[in-house]
Image (tube, one colour):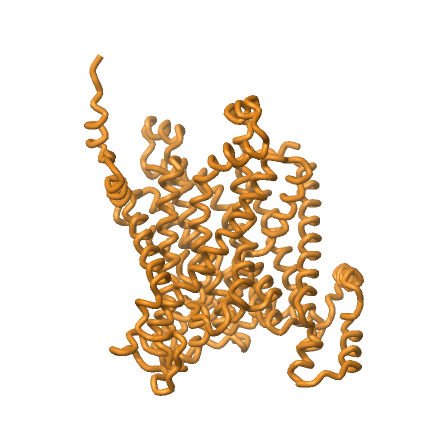
Length: 315
Length: 297
């Protein structure tokens, strides 16, 4: 087990290192750096001024040297300066991270709250009208684009309250915050809850066909005991995996949702930084997202081993 | 010993199938949701192919007098700010959306299948390298990866296709690799090798066809996500550029400001995206039930 963990840990570092190289090179392959963009809008180019700015930003150095600077900075906690705001990247990101983290946590909470029980019901009542209805609902959860759902919610707000919720100012108290954030969290969490519901259903169905379920039934256990004691306990394992993976991948959905609701979180900030070619922000944010994803996967693996005694990580 | 009347048994089980139409009817009866999905997809496909015959107006024709026109007899679904007919734009949007989604799914699928087949069959350093590369690609959510790629490549239809295709590669590669790993130990592969077949030919003629069932399921699912990612990229202004009508961009043009004044601009493109993805998901589910016997009731 410990050898597995060490190996797994080094693979994780390797993945992140590879990601850093890919993202760094990709961003430098873009035709036109920030200096070009600044001068494009000015209409004329003074080569001396442009060269000065490029030197100031370190853009005239060879790409490997620029990469080494970035890596060195990462180790010392210096993430560079945003091209756009000219503030340290750390100061730009730090206040935005908690907002996105709260939204993701709330969305995940909603999706488990609805996804898990509805998935179980759907499996237990397989092929009934209820099952069909729940399956159609969960499929539509996977089909509705999250930005459209967000727009529909805004539309409902306009119709019923005459105004849309504002996220640019910090909420007054915890209750307000919870209330305010649960709207976008529901918009982005609908998809995850549909995913969890579908996985719970198929996992339950598979378990319900196992021999030990037949044994439980033949010894006279009640249907409830079979469904919730014998089956659910075993069926929930793959669901734990998907919950862990969704925790990290919610950021993908939040990119859109935060943009539509105009929420000042990191996901919205990523889109803005990409559109403005603010490399220091983009590369550090992408690395941050990759770290979250990789660490979540690692935790999922560990949880899996802890929950399922059949799994032993042999070397 | 009594004779078993197979035909009667099948008829009793409701599974007697005769001819091509019989098979179709059986599919509809056995998988009504899947058949509905297929029907939806066919409608979108026809709309995409025959867009120039179906659309009543030119989707690019601007008309000042029709700016933000509400749905009526001329503009069935209303008109946008520039007076372009929404119904025609949605019909042509199906063409853009399906071209991007189908091409990127195929492109990503083919690269993924080749990588997975080679890494599962050759193993060794190639497998090791591919696995690490796939690990890296899976360290970012699909949309974030596509977003960064689209921004790097710049907005055009071709680049949008590439930006969606590349993030789809790892999943296909994983699926094919794992089936290849188990298939390569099968007796029929050994038999082919004993018969003097070349490795390349074994991989393509004997292993690849046996990985098709999970691949078809995967491709259908990926087609749905490709449509969603294209819409999302275009919504954020990083996907299909003007003047092509794209469902996603139609929504971003109409976003917050028209939620109040012209709701039809928000509702109809969204319905088009959702229906198309819903169709692929319904069909994909039925195909999975059909091809994966473990899921059957």
